[in-house]
Structures are given as C-alpha cells and as structure tokens.
Length: 161
Figure 1: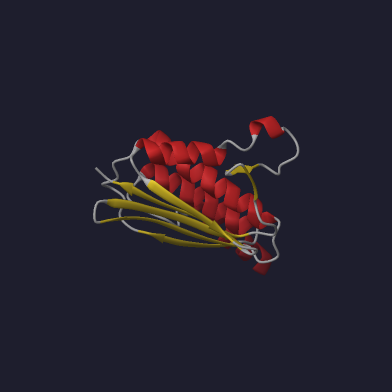
Figure 2: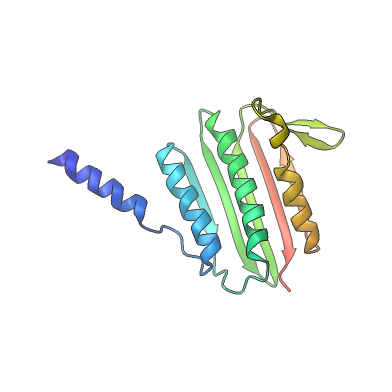
C-alpha cells in the first residue's frame, strides 16, 4: 500500500506545474527542466518573478533558456554534486537571467570561443553558446561568462523595451 501511495504522490508531483512566471513559454521550459532535475536527482534552485511584461520574442526565450539549461544539465550529470541555480527576473526595465551549475572539468576555450567536448556528432554541437550570444546582442544586451574548477556561470542583462 505504501508503495502505491508513493507512486501516486510522485506522479502527481511530476505532473503539477511547480513554476508559474505568468509567461507560458518560460513556464513550459522551467517545469519540464524541473521534472528532469527531480528524475535525475539534481537540485534545481529557481528564482523567478512575474514575467508577464517580458518584451522578448518567444523564439528567443527558447534559444536562451534551452541552450543554457541543456548545457547546465549535461555538465551536472558528470558531477557528484548536481546543483543548478537559475534566475530569471524582470526588474527596473531589465531582464536578468543567470544560470550557475557545478562542473567536473573546466570548459575548453580556443581563440576566445568555447569548444564542444562532446564526442558523437561533434559538428552539431558547440553552437548553443554562440546562438545565445547572438540573441543577447540582438536586443542590445550584455553577458558575462565566469567559471572556475567547480562552477560555470552565464549571466545576462537585456533591456526590456
């Protein structure tokens, strides 16, 4: 009986939307990633606020969030401590996005660009960060990439006008 109740409880938790930012696209991505984190035993810390007045195209939100979060999840899967800290807030006409995650090895940088360390289908990998940067620049935003031996962080500021 306890096993049955536990299964139902887990199913209910996975099917409920844990995050509501008042933005359908952001909600869909974050709730999907939240469920993925739970299923992989990761800690996914979120700081969000009301994003209903977000003035960035939906496709561009997808480019930024999917690339940054997919990279963070892939990096964390290699780590003993699996922690991702995510912030997406709108304050004072600025969009603030930050993804910080544990890493097992420092990223490879060649000629000022990040180089993929993924083996299979290498030609299809390594475009994510460039696509994110292009999207940020499209809106006149700024970004900062910082890392050390244990953490990787990608921070973004985009004017919301």
